[in-house]
Length: 103
Ligand code: HEC
Image 1 (cartoon, helix red, strand yellow):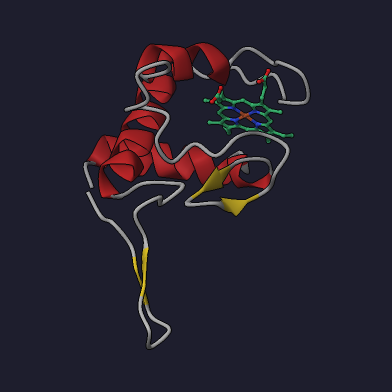
Image 2: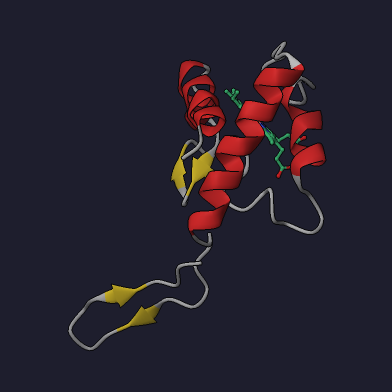
């Protein structure tokens, strides 16, 4: 993970984004899952950045600098590169193991 993505992960943790958002379906359920927000053709990095400081609905109003927003995007980009959520091509084996699709 790049230094910038690590900075983004720290911002993610310090601001408790997980209280309301999920990555891989894990986290709070007030806001949407953000695993694939960066590669989503209807969303993407600029869309995500617009939300960071918007204070919409029940999301708190943050005041991130452009640099912090870029770090958050790079963290989410890193997460996005690792897999899919929901994982629609998961295979359920007879032995009970589930094989999920990785990117
Ligand atoms: C108290 C709950 C809460 C916290 C904490 C929170 N959010 Fe949100 N967030 C929401 C809600 C609710 C929405 C949906 C708003 C809407 O659709 O109008 C949202 C929407 C978003 C979206 C747009 C998602 C989409 O697919 O449309 C992004 C990106 C986002 N939040 C990022 C973050 C980040 C990054 C943090 C931490 C710095 C964070 N949020 C912290 C509640 C929260």
